[in-house]
Length: 436
Image (tube, rainbow, N blue to C red; front, side, top):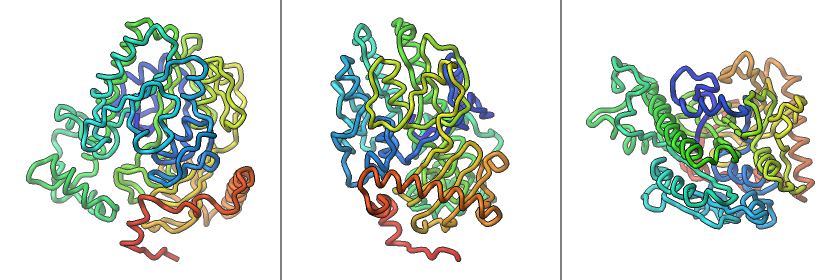
């Protein structure tokens, strides 16, 4: 489910009933509590999911970048196809990015019927996925389903739009100023004119909580589609012999840190995503260790009896899932963005350190340190108060980057070499001096 942050699901502690089907699935699954995406947004995240490699290794560091996914990069569907699996994607990434379609015998793109691909409805996806499952249930198969519903613009069906918004409140209250800074967002003016102001005809939406409620409604709508897939697996007898994984490429920032309804920056709202793994031989449990997107491909290959290539950098989660080991897989996950912001991040179980390679148009500090136990929303930057911890985190991060660069024969940070993509034109139009 694209653009799904973990903390907006009931099984991850959310107070709204956004995910009844995923919550029920969580009761049958291994749930990874601290699952992190090492690269955002969509293109680098999916390249990592499919390759089991960090972005600095597979080379896709930005969304809409100029570098294709090389054939030498290990690719999950291609490996499974070679192992005898019938492979299918119900998705629209391959037409955007060369290399994402490799290894799929069937590539079904319902979004091609839409003027804007991200508006492809989960019901459109299921209208292709469910018949495919029915027709191919006798074969060993790998099916990848990509839902877009929670992505901006949040436009759930009308019956869902007030599902999580107080009926007594007015989303267009002129006294509400929570969307006052929306125009500072690169797409803010376009969103107000072409999205938000179309939701309530003749009025201007002013309440950011209303927009967040729309995001939650999109999750609920998509959750029902996932429920239909689970029902289909049950009806066809596939649940008893299938490995099912549910995750997201990245999360979403609501309206904190000045980031309105988008996935800019390396804050938890973007990096902490769900991972539910169900296998008929495994008992439900919760994994508290740090896991990451690089682990998913090796894990799937492990359960399918296929040897993971040595070039994959992630770990199989099978021992954790089976309860055979509680040993941490890693001490930290390194994360990066090079689409709207150019930043590296170091995520441990309890802390986050963010290092900018260049200033961003939000004017955020170049170095940020957060205690995630005391400050889960990352409002209090401790880089100045805890300089020694910040220095230690920075040293670990820089050494990790340097080591990966040496392994690839790189002499320059790939973020600097590549440059921003979606943020580049915005920076040229609206330069912003970074605060001292």
